[in-house]
Image (cartoon, rainbow, N blue to C red; front, side):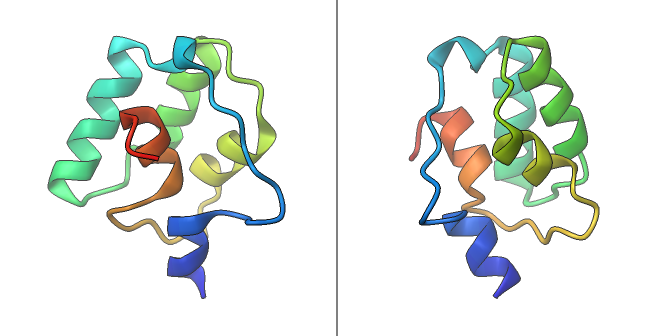
Length: 84
């Protein structure tokens, strides 16, 4: 169930993602995590997104939740990379 939540997020609460949040830092972090399949930098991605103006609690909480399982296909990483 945790992996499904990581891939699809909450289907009952769609998230709007602003292209302005795709800074060089956010893109580099997301690309590195996607390619390496190592997601320990998710809290740093949250900081980068917040620095870029992201105030969406679903996105930021997903990245910062220490109990969240992250896998390739993570909905937040995919949003940053423009895959979703």
